[in-house]
Length: 119
Image (cartoon, rainbow, N blue to C red; front, side, top):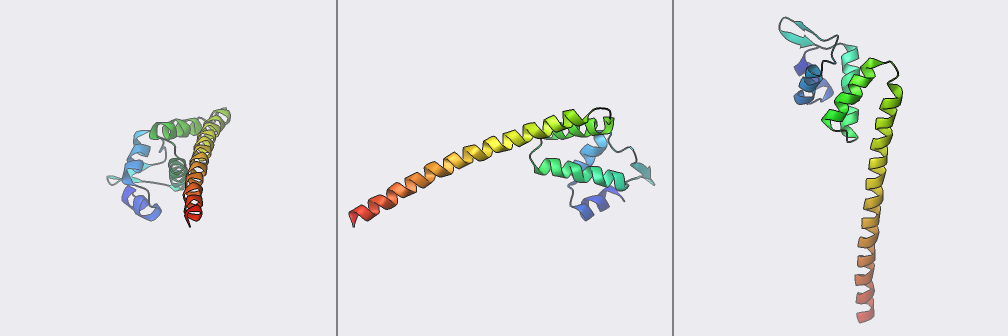
């Protein structure tokens, strides 16, 4: 499968495919008649890259995670630590947003309560 076919079929932006190639993660990707060819392993890795991107990993974090994955020697704990840190960051953001919503709801309550008292 060529880079354009992979991009279209799996809805992966070309920039991400070019990053993947630049990182040297595509061991099985080879040029056939001038076009990069992706195999099933590459497509699985690209799916993981998209997942990491979707959950908020920066490009540099994705590159680090993927290089650790390819090491396979004791990288599980490092990758798990990265995932736990991202999870905590997301939870902190959720809690911050919940506090914002609570304050917003209180202001709405005050306005509605004032309207009732004026009637």
